[in-house]
Length: 393
Image (cartoon, rainbow, N blue to C red; front, top):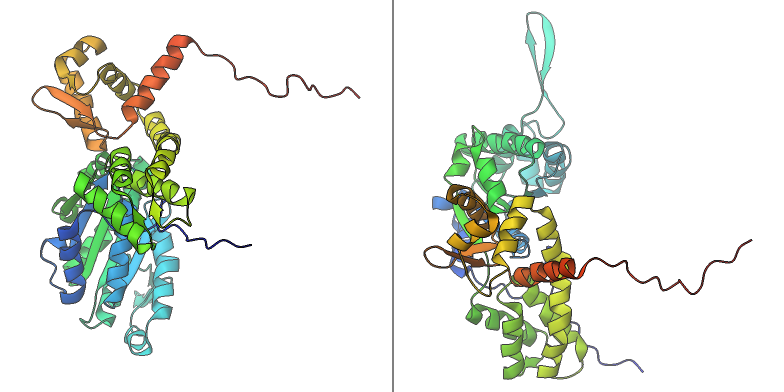
């Protein structure tokens, strides 16, 4: 017998747009208005920063949907190697082919994608390589003021090679903007990586970008997302369960979706998510976020970053900078450098004059568990096949 299974409305997968977007309502409204009015204001270029799982990729997806809903063209990619080639040789030709016939015809006099421009000089035929700036301007012009071009680039990285190519890409956009193209460009990444991008010369327009910082939602925003998402799925959540899920998630957008999904799936046929469902989500959700996000965040840090966080983890709650200097046996200026780095990555935040505290939920617990394991000494895992050795042939 097939049960009346109700699918979960929560979306904890990478890059999946949540059914209910929490926070940043004013920013979303202002950015979306540009797609309707073509009145850019401060929104010509936007930098979206925040820790992993804070909703940056979901924000890009939301903006793409709003742009396409108003007839804009969208170029969406990430900052991995080969960005320029992918956009010029694949994305732009695909967009051109998908345009309506009138817009497609308006592009007939432009060179888009892999086509060059030929001319004669000193009796010899020469061909110029296409430039991204010309392609972007041509696409913008083809819309004849009825829309623009949204460019979203995710996963900005501070790797030298990737930043060099991304800087070239940004320079081409800058030239297209200077020539009058209707473009909104949005870059997303960790704050420290975006800062490295801004250091590159010729990226003047990016230094004037509007900045959006994605961190944790407020308790009220968290409760709203959980309750509204549950309602969209055709169920309700008991008040005590809602409080418990809010407390577990700590306003961390990825964890909100994760614990909501776990709580939903425990009893998908019940009309109400119960406190028992929320309890079920507690252990599974925290373990999952530590395995999938926090452990990777920690492994990516430098050894001195780890030293800073391990020194913080000795305290419950906030930590005095003076205590960090003593525990790390370091000068004040040295400690301040790592404090700034970790604040920019979103893992630490100021907690009053001379104090810091963890801002990524459960990072402190994860580090304490590592310290406890080291104190007990590392033991090899038990081999479940120890009593069943392979037979000799």
